[in-house]
Amino acid sequence: MKKYIILGLVALLMSSCAEQITRLAQYPKMYEEKPLTIAVMPPINQTNFVEAKDYFYTTLYAPLCEKGYYVYSPMMTMEMFQAESAYDAELFIEGNLSQFRNVLGADAAMFTIIKSWNRNKIGGSLTAGVEYILRSTKTGETLYRREGLISVDTSINSGNKGLFGALVDLAATAINTAATDKVVAGRKCTLYVLSDMPEGKYGAKFDQDQNMPAGKSYVKATVR
Image 1 (cartoon, one colour):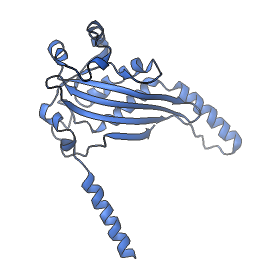
Image 2 (tube, one colour):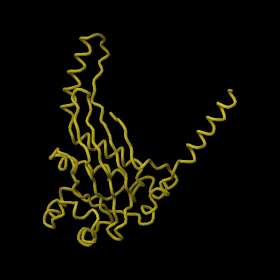
Image 3 (cartoon, rainbow, N blue to C red):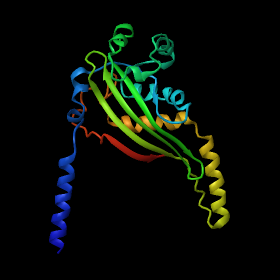
Image 4 (tube, rainbow, N blue to C red):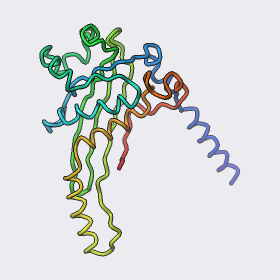
């Protein structure tokens, strides 16, 4: 019996390893084009939380820079987007992006679609559901695409037992959740989802991370 259990575990492990895909296999266009500069497009907001678009827009700059890319400041490009009617990114997500290459010199444009944005004060969490799409301004090809449903755990556990302790933790959780900046939650979502994005020219692993594992196209996780 033990023999069959061991064989089953070995087979499961081998199957798991066989399913592992590298970043080169998952995102071949990233290594072909090697984009250097990225223009962050205003998010496409599909939620009822109107402010989500502006909140999330400011969270994209730093994580992309940390991945080794030169990213045009959203604040600097905002006026241009508004002048060119590009603030409604829905018009460009499947359209011609050559103007962003010609005017800004951007190699790629990062689109984001906010699909959910919720705050749970009682449960102690901020949850963002976002899809990330990086398109080439030269070929129009999709270089990178990944979606995540990321919950930021804001719960408080003091370790106190009993009904009183539970009530104290509940109140503390509600206060902490309300006080947690939405920008912080958005940035953590972006950092987690883009964790498997091939690094840019200014990254320590630029052109050396082809064989590193790529994540699933859809990821669900809870972070603190």
